[in-house]
Length: 166
Image 1: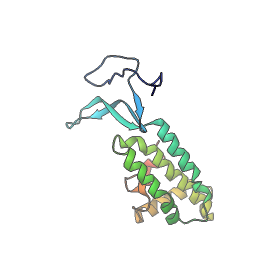
Image 2: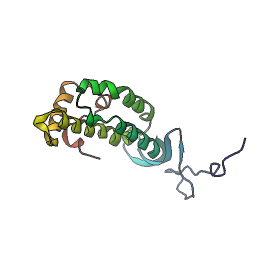
Image 3: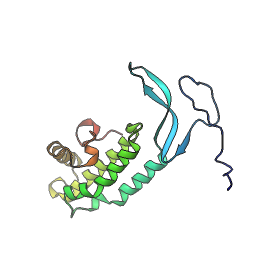
Image 4: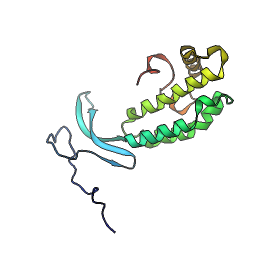
């Protein structure tokens, strides 16, 4: 067995107590990126801590998976069918990557809402090319059925100013 020449290295776990500089201050392991991140203590004060969150490579892979669903092209399916199609996978992502620094997943999960808006624009003739109306339609559905999509359970519903936030 041989070690990869680029892999073994000394890592400096930089945080609020260790303020020095070093060449390597982060690493990726099992889809998580470990690096210095902003945290809040129990008194509400912010500080820097060495924490893990979903890595950019994992986000790219999950985005590729979401694009492969072609949600906007599924105008033959109902919203319930779309929810059944993507709930298990999205729930698995949230359960695995959401344990640490869950907010790094939010932009990815909001992207599902954007694809649902495109789906609604294609599905219903009265809101074709009217994204605002499609958002209102999905927001009403989210209010009536808040547990329809897995990412809606966590408060990422398609309503208000959060819908377009990145």
